Each structure stands twice: as structure tokens, then as C-alpha cells.
Image (tube, rainbow, N blue to C red; front, side):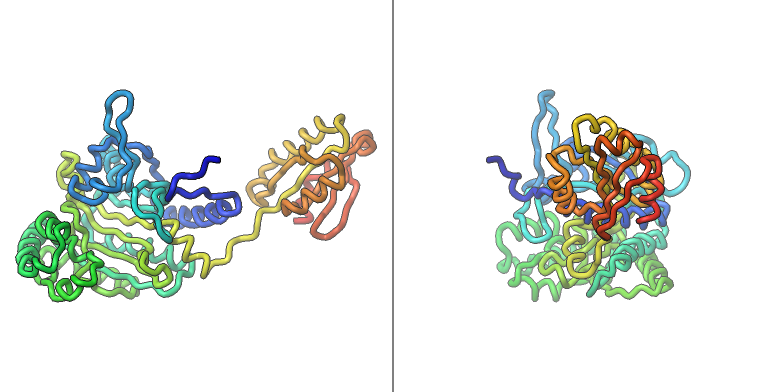
Length: 423
């Protein structure tokens, strides 16, 4: 028997209904901020991520699913979506459209990590990207989207952490200071960690190695290296958050290790996720456009893992009840064409399908009225329509309300109205 690939989960119907409720709410929130959905391919050129994310990062070196197709193209399953969105932004000249481009995405990403709670090899992300403005208030607006999502789902025990990475000049100075400091403690680092100190010292601040925590705690802070422009940007972000009455903590050790990140970085954390505490995180990445040969392109975004969100919602959110369902059953073979027509008539009624969100099924597999009613009960159906020879001759149907144990014989053309009255 075949099984699913390790770290890639099946979502069965009982779960997808919950996911769809969550996804619809997320979309409504993004639409309220005037964001529009963008959909990019799951498969991208491998070079897109070696350029954007960096060939020395763990994502590129260890975690990407890569392959060569029949045309000798080096391809990969996307490990994240920001690079894909910016590729599409330049490829389709969205930079020529009027105003700030507010874009969001929702879909699967792929990384070959060790599977654990809330962290799979195929995982789903919601992300938002605002491209085309360096205004600090856009940074605060982006953070407020993440916070509104958390508020909408009543997520408990949350902490918002923010920091600044400064501009390129700031990071150059800070990188040198941090590297000098860390190399003074080189004996405490493993060979791999020491390589990171040389290649990307900011990533050391993210280390979970208990032996390094005291060293990290005493490390110089980037806020001490800020020039006036960077300091002003961070001050304005905080002013905007205070105007929104947002509670936050400045965490000087919150960094993004990739060179194109700048200025604002933020994370929303939840206690209920254990080691995987981050609900969503983001930052400004004005330098990513240069990786595409397009020059500085002001942009900021965030992403959140939907598996982690679903774990939190197990504790704090009540899902809407299942959609009402009606099933049809033909008592004899001759009534099957009529049953098919009646079921389709209901499906074509937009008030039933869009407002009431009625599900319409036909119990083709049932062999008798008794088995049809038993099956309808198991499936959670509210109504069953029975059609036999006598009803068909009169143009009637028998409508059973399983929830209230009532039934009526009514003209078939009154079925839609009767359902609307009863739901």
C-alpha cells in the first residue's frame, strides 16, 4: 500500500472544511486592506532562490527540493514566495501600474526539514507584500494586518517583537563590529557555527545553541550602530504603532540574515506553540530588487504558517457548523432521471447555494429507502427527498426533515421554497 511522503500531510474533508473557513476569513482581512491575490507557480528556476535567498543559506544548501527537467533546466519547488512575487512583479511590469502594489498569496511551500509539530516539508503560508513605498507607516500598516488576523481569531498569549536592521551603511558597520566580537569567542563555536560567523554573523543572533546564549546576550546591538536616517525610520514606525495603540517589545536580537533586508523586522509569537512559537514574521527588503537587476525597490512583507495557525485555533476558536445538506433518493430505476433533474434545479438556485450554502447530493449507492435514510443520517444530512412512481405521477416529492423528524408530500416545484422556509 502506498503512503504519503514523509512530512507531507493529507487534509481529509473534515479538516479541509476548517481550513476553508480560516482561509475565507484571512482573505476578507487582506481585502479590507486593499490587497489583491497573486498566484505564482509551485515550480520556479533554481537560480531564482540562489540569487534571492543566497547560495550559502540553509534553505538553498540543505532544504530545497530541486530537480532537472527533460530540457536540462534546473528547477525547484518553491521554499518561500517572496522571491516569486517579486519576480512576477518585475516580469509583468507591475512597477508601471499606478500606486503601491498590495499583493497577497496563500498556498503550499516546500522545505526538506525535520518534520515536527507545526512544521512540515509541505507547509502552507499566507503572505502579504507591499511593493513601491519606503514610508515607515507602510511598515506599521503591514504589522497591523498581522495583528488584526490574530485579533480576528482571538489568538491568546501573543507578543509582538520589533527591531530595526538599519540601512546598508548601518549593517556594514554593525556586521564588522559583530563579527569582531564573535571571533573573540571563537572557541565556543562549532565548525559550522564559525563558518556562519564569517559568512553571515547576523544569523548567529538567531542561534538556539544553549552554549552561545550568554555570548549572544552580551553582543553589541544594531541600534547602537544606526545612522540618523535609519534611526528616524525606526522612530516613525514606533510612532505609527503607538498611534494604533499597539503593544510591542523592541528586541535588538531580532534579525534577518539576508543582505537585502533593511530597517523594520517583526515577529508575532505565541506561547501555545512551544518551540515553534512564531505565528508570523516579516520585514522590509528594499535590497531584493537589486538581486533581480532592477535596483533598489522599496518593499515590505510578512508570512505566516497556516499549520501553526490551525494548531492555535484548536485551543481558541469555534468553527462554524457544517453546511446544511439535502440528499435525493430514487425508489426505482425509472425515477433516476427525474431525481437528477431535481437535484440540478436546486444547484442552479443561487440563493440556496451562495446564501444558505446548501450541499446537494444524490444517494446513488443506496439500495432501499431504509439504507438511504441510514446513509443520510451518517452523512449529517438535514433533508432527504424521496421520489417513487406514485409521487412522480402526481408531480410530487416526499421531503423528510431528519433533524425534526417531520415529512411532507409537496409539489416538486415547491421544493426550493419549502427548503428556504425550513432553514
